[in-house]
Every structure is written in C-alpha cells, then in structure tokens.
Length: 175
Image (cartoon, rainbow, N blue to C red; front, side, top):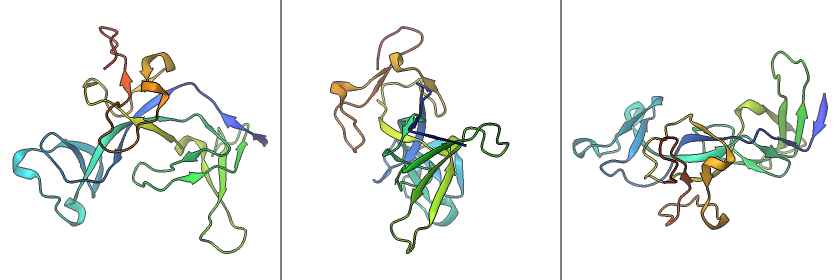
C-alpha cells in the first residue's frame, strides 16, 4: 500500500446531482424510489409528490475524479454531503479496491474513528453545466480542452450567470 497526495486522470464527467427549488416545466428530476432514470417536468406533473414517487430536482454538473488531500468530495450522487480527504492510500493488486481508498475522520463521531471509501466512488463537483449544452448526457466524459470555465470561477450556485460551457464534438463551439 502506497500513501499518495493525489489521484490524477485529467478527465471530467457529467453527473446529475440534486438541487433545491421548485420544479418548473423543462426541469429535470429523478424519483426518490428510482435514482437512475431522469425525467423532464411537464405542465401536468409539477407537484413534488411524496414517498418513493417524490420528485427530486436535478441539474447536470461537471465533476472530476482528480482528487487530492484537502479536497472536498462527495461519495454519492444521492447525497449533498461533502467530506474532506485526509489521506489517500493507493493499493497495488488489491482485488476489492484496485485504485485504493480515501480516508477521513467524521467530526460528529467521538473518538478517533477513521472512515474510508473506494477511490472509484469519490468525485468533486466543479460546477453547473450550461443548459445550452443540450448534447451532454449523464456519464459523458470530457478532457480539459473540451471544458470552458468562465473567468476561472466555479459556478456551483443556483442562478449562476456564467455556467460551465462544453465543447460540441460536432461543430467545435462551446455552449
């Protein structure tokens, strides 16, 4: 097992993440009981529902699996909880965790309990993807030169005037 400062792969991924707010026509959502399918809100189905049919608003975010010690990361698309990486352990030839694990302490737990997660499940949120990039689907991967972050800012908040633009693979423009 090797200790490491970072995991680099120079690739971004588009993921649907939950956001707060009421559902409007055209918004994307997932059902609480079915976190895999993405639906588009129509005029006749704007109520949020409840239980396993509760609608959870989602938006496409640009995320990265490039992680390093000190990064705030998420371990699940279903949770907005972020953790701070304290340690990265690369494992060579481990059948269960081929890339290794990340480690952190949980502040609300008494004692010195260490928590870990496979590196493959960890990602950091870079920012909101422009709604003009209609061709982008969840799971799409992009290289650095296919992504345009305006003014170097990270637009992760609702109603951001300058979301991240993605290069169209057909015409080469950023939208």
